[in-house]
Length: 235
Image (tube, rainbow, N blue to C red; front, side, top):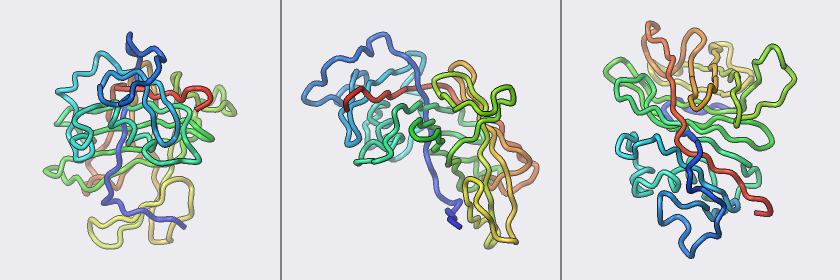
């Protein structure tokens, strides 16, 4: 059984099309501009489509974004796991952002399409309301009851879920196992629901989550699409 400490922070983010995002040949420094059309990464070459509706000045700040000098395309490289040679490299990565400082989950969510469709996040909670370390991570399961056997396609609207098991070792110190792994008999199970509609991504909980200490907190957050990275053929 694989457990991950719930104190971890993980990152999520979003995607869309930029009118200047044609697949042009990369320059010697393809990531020097936040509007670069192509990224050269350890996992291959990716076309960058920035969402023109996103105001860079409103993006939630964290250490990794600062390391990328606020360059959303460069930050997406990190969020999508492209800054190392990844045998399971994604064919597509959509990054969404929730920037409302009054939200229960503030930060980024990325939807990665490869052998399966996964979600990874980089989130902060509201400590004044009992927020703890929080992440949403793992392979998504289709919940479209009209097409239950259909493979998830993150480029289109979808509905999905992500189960988890959690065990509180001590007050506020949670161990979390994403997916459908068995969990210690002292633990509890929960479910995240993930829904894409147009350029928005909704993340909500079933009954409870390990992200807040109080049971009166119910998470239902909407993230806006920010950037999409698409692997170019032959890369």
